[in-house]
View (cartoon, one colour):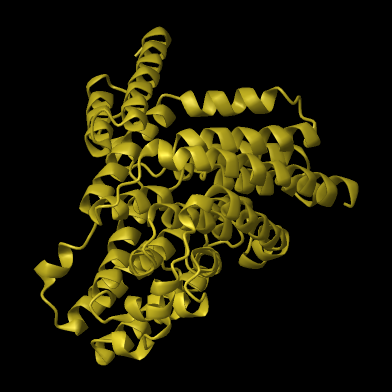
Length: 437
C-alpha cells in the first residue's frame, strides 16, 4: 500500500473511532453495539486485520485483561453465594453508624488499598456487590458510591506495579521493580487519596441522606447472620488469598496475572460443586465484548500509526528538555488516556518513553519520565467512563443491577477529579525530581 493510501486509511480510522466514541458518549445506541460496530468497520477499511486484532500485543485485544476479568468474575460469582458480601456490607454500615458519607469513606479506603495489593479491576468486582447491599440498607443511590470506588481504584492502583495494568507494562519496559513503584508513587498516592475523600464530600453531597430509622435497624443487625455457607466462604477466601499472593509474586513465579486469575476461578468453581452454567451467567459477558471491540478500535489507531504520531509530536515539542518533556508527557498521557483505554495507550507510548529516557542517559533523573507516564495514564483514566478498565466494569455491573450509570454521569465527576489529581502531580514531580533531586 502506498504512503498516500495508508494515510487515507489512518484518517478513516480516526473518523470511525470518533463516530463510535460519540455514539458511546451520547448513548444513542448501546455501548457494546457501538464498540463492535466500530471494530467491524475498522476491519472493512483495512485499518486492522485478524493478525493484528487477535494476535498482536500492541495493536489487538489484550487477552490478559479479558481472561483476568473472566477469572475474577468467576471467583466473585462463587463468593456471592456465601453471604460474605452481606457480612462486609453490614459491618461497614454499623461501623459508620448508618451515615452515608462515613460508609463512602470506608468503602473508598478499602477499594484504594485493595487496588494496590490486587489490581483495580479485581477490586471493583469484589467491592461492587457490597456497595449495592450497603446502599440498599441505607436507602441511598448506589451510583455515587460506585463512581467514587472506580476512581479510588484507579488512584490506589497507581501506587504499585500490579495495581493498574499499565504499570505492569511500564515496569517491564522501564526495568522498574515492585519496590520502585512503592518508593516513587505510593507516598504521593496517599496524599491523593486524602484529597479525593475531601472531593467526595463535595461532589456527592446530595447522596448523603441520613435516615435515623434505617441507622437504628442497621445497628440491630448481626454480621454473622449474613453468612449462608461457611465452608464455601472459607474455600473462596483461601483461593482468593492464593490468587492475591500470586499477583504480588507474579514476576518471581513467571505467571501472568490473567493465568493466575483464570486458574483460581476455574479451581474454585470445580471445588465449589456449584452448577457451572448458573455461575457462568453471572459473568459480565457484555462488558467483556465491549472491551474486545474497544481494544480492536484502539488497536487500529495504533496499527495505522495515529497514536504514535500524536505522542511523538507532543514530545517533540519539548525539544529534548527534561522538565517540559515530563509535563507534556504527564498531561498528554492524562488527556489521551481519557479518550482511549490507558492499557493500549501505554503499550504504544512506552517505546517512545524508553527512547527518551535512553537519550537522557537512561537512569537517575531521566526516570521521572516513567513516573510521569504512569501518573498521567493511571490518573487520566478517571476522566471518562471508558478511560480505564475499572470504569467500564463498574458501568457494566451497575447496568446489570438495574442502576444504570450514564457516560456523562460518570464523566462530569471524572473530569474534575482528574484535573485536581493530575494538577497535584505537577508540583510533586517538579519538587521531588528537579528541585530536591
